[in-house]
Image (cartoon, rainbow, N blue to C red):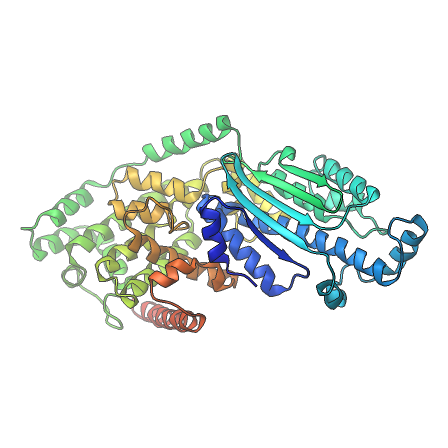
Length: 496
């Protein structure tokens, strides 16, 4: 067991992070994955998480299996370098090769270890998996052959049919790893096998740009062009925003102006009720909504309502994204109130509502690319397509969202919340309170949907928000979930 947040800080300092183990259980796997998640968030490469989790798992398990083989041969007094002993040992070893739990105690008592190393360099993220057992010539030959062949096949089924090896085990971990990296836009050269006298290292380097500069620049230009061509707000919304900024404007004037547009009035009422300004009491009048939420918050809500209407009209509708944003927004407001961040309560709600706007443009950038991505998602049974869109384009949805936020002249704190909602510890954040609140709200929604561990959340954020133990965290989350469930029932009962 190790502290992934402390190791992430070590990574921030430019130091090499190394973790070593003899046997991998569920707890260690969660720790490794949480460290990876935090490292990638610092590099704005969170979309590589699912790919690298699979790669890490395969490489680590390969190392554990190689160690099991050595322990097995040593326990049977067999010489792994003698061909006769090798054939004899492998006959029985195949029965346990895919059941490391059978040899858990022997592995823990052995001298063999697998070490995972990570370091951030100017040329990219360096990752290596080191096994302190000398690789056999036949093993090395098989590994390199499988790496070469993996680059030739188009899908994993084809690889499985051609490469299954009943004598040495399936041996598909290396193939799967290479194919996953290839799908992520990484060239074969990033993946290397380095044998040594007493160890074997498999290393890979994740470059700063997954795609060539030309491809990335082309896509960015297309996205920028798309963002720049977004229409401006409707005239009545612009007028209302100006009225909200005028300290002499009366509530009656604002309310009357909103009421002239029935669709806008409905949006304002829905948003004000969804924000949960008054628990259990339905807001039914525009004047009531304006009084409760205030002119500053009304300005933000007008922005959110107009933006969603334009986005839904311009792009395909992505209800799943909006549903996630609604839940994140509610959580963000509740978290800000819970931790005493009164000044950011309302802006946190709006930031939560808009934090994933980049995904909508991302998912609508290229119809041909979107169809290809859909095929990959179905073939690989990947749980969400946005990961593959980002891999295919080489730009994160948070970066795209920040472009949109700048286009719409969002306040700086909103732009930062959109840009850094996956990276709350970035050094140049000015409005850190609202960023941390939106980050935590988003993480809680992700944890709920994916049933992940709270270790994935930056401990520094939890400390800043005075959530200092796992028990306190679990109670905190339970309170938020219960409030949200009650609020959802309220909306279902009273809102159309």
